[in-house]
Image (cartoon, helix red, strand yellow):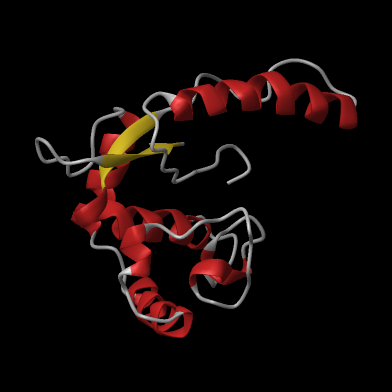
Length: 157
């Protein structure tokens, strides 16, 4: 996964995620280039994003992202991947920059309960149809599981 990354972000303000991605391009990329003695674009093109219907697909997309380094053969356990949020979701680490989504919070009354339920969920393989569905919708910047009138969460990848 040295050629891309996934972020699962929620913003209460429409359009804020695109603004955040522009900031990454205008602030982080120059810093990265300076630090590594390089120049030019850091990424191949504009970020892709799709809307995720929170209530039904949010945790499936989170699992898809956290299992991505396992599918890529980089690690055997998602918690071992350096850039993953899996350790936070599994309750083995804390990161103040990560705010749990309401769908994750609904998994249990305590941090330990949520971590146990999510651990069981993460151990379940993603069905081939579900995997293909998520990949296709991300590639095409199409909404994942969006029901008319329901809110969603954007997934820049």
